[in-house]
Length: 617
Image (cartoon, rainbow, N blue to C red; front, side, top):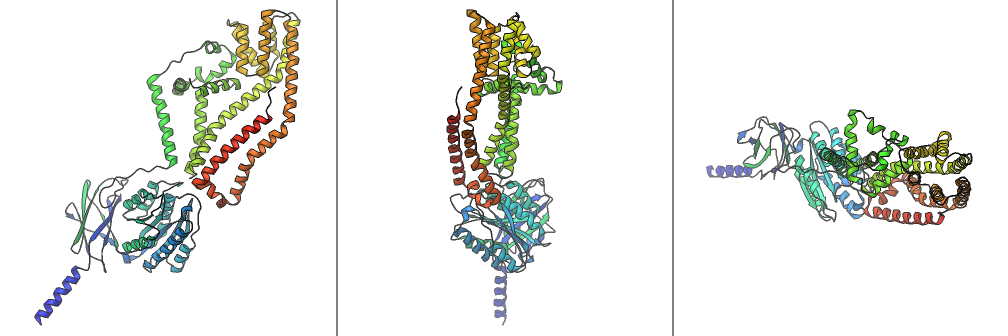
């Protein structure tokens, strides 16, 4: 009898010793330091084991254990993007439904679906029928894959979980993030704030990118799984088994340096470590893994812009340039035009000297470029009291003002680039429109001005006196430009050079014809008054013929405007009526390629139409 009892006792002890298998530490969360949360699993555990936690060899007291049977709150983040269309999405839904069969009856489950946008498909609930319905009715999305937005949304929704429940997020995707408004660090912080553990499943495809999913799992104490289309259900089942065997050990640490953590459960133990630090630190499980910096396209854009500004400021402090001034620039200081333009330079308060220095530095760096010279000439033609550097920074600011919000809103990269290009172009278009309007006003005043000068010459006045008459009685650009000519002549510049400079500055073909005629007449002699009368009649005839050509080609120009604008208006209308219909064009690589081809084709067509309706008079 004693031998039988001994054998029975030995069998019971062996059964008890083998009731628990190996202990595995999945992650250490110190985001709420000094509070520490360790996620562990025990293979083959049929009941809650007794855990012992040690830090640097010293036992830890007051360890709170969250058991698998104490109730879970689970958020399923399901990838329903364009790459999952058809069989992949069907198998994903089937695998998720099988996952629901593995969870405990009292577990609460919510569903987040995501493609080019993330949406709460079903709020967290304990109703099994509602859980199955939420997974079955996942809505398909065309376009991008906003993984970080989905993780962030799941972390926010899981805050509605029942009190005391373990919070778990299961995130499955087949690609990399594209178009999220939140960064991976935003999503990880939201999950840590919610004390949620993220288990990730990566479906191996051509666009397979495991890095962010591994980071999610490591930062929150979860695990990372790789699956093919055929093993997707097995991956979900492995996550369910891991959840059902996982425990969360929470305690308050007193350590301030490197910590070696040992977790033992009835004879089995596991060891890991972490660096004790401030609450902002993110510590990976099962070893020390540095946090990876992941920046979306909008953050890269902001970083590049900040770097550009810092570089310019550094160049300003180092070089402090003293740009050389040409003869025209030295004479400009005595003209009315330059006095208006120099208000910001010569009359500035000391507080704005840094801006002046920045403008000068930029002028020195970029002043030799052709586009810079063309912009300077355009500003002068528009009669604006602005420096070229100021216009450049205005254009850059307008580009960022449109591009950065578009990028932060999750727009595709092509849309953000187009927005930046539009923003950079708008100030230039405004200046060009003002210069064109001022030139047109000058041309309209030119015949009457020439007639007035001819009448003054017939009355016996000299050329300079005739110009002074125009300055006194004229208005608008004619008065401003002739005032500058008179000032330059009084300062010693020849009248011929001053008139040629005015013709180049104003950009008027008619006035260039006038300048050439006057200069030739002065060399060969003759009646200047009669010549100006003839030139005035010629200019009137040219303007009349130009207006006639414009009227005859108005229908062609309107057709060109209609053909160019129609695709944009039609696309905007379709997008407003049915946004999903435009998703393949806006959120897929093929759609982006087609948009680029369409824009190039439209540009070529617009150029051809412009050539058809344009005539040189």
